[in-house]
Length: 154
Image (cartoon, rainbow, N blue to C red; front, side, top):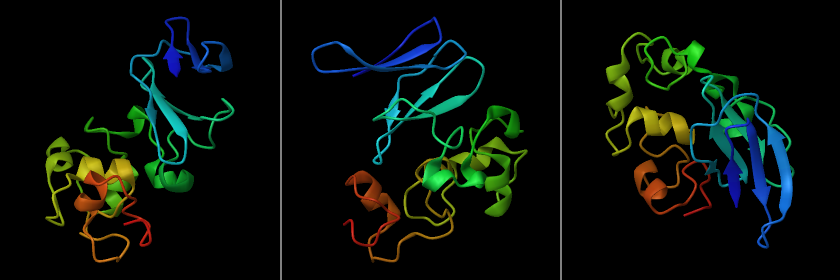
């Protein structure tokens, strides 16, 4: 179980309620934790930062938001998001989105059913309906909790 506090602390608890580890985020936490398939735990703070913490140790991951192996295009701080759509400007530019237009976050460039904001969040290519080339579209893999970046996961 993961618990955040107003005292800038984020805790992992064992099943018996004892502390497994603690991490000091440096700001009041304002979001529920999200756990990635690799075990990384993401939590948002009031200072607009999203901390990525290794779920097994409580150590900070290499990037502030290391989606897809710490890819710098997906590292995200809201100060790098001109239009406030929660997609990093570098990613928007790389895929032909307009970093000054928040409406493009809610578009689906490849027509497979996932909005660009979701494609950004899960690390898939918004221009390819099937990012891993396994014959199953990203949206189906996402909805079935398989990895749309791994051709062997479906």
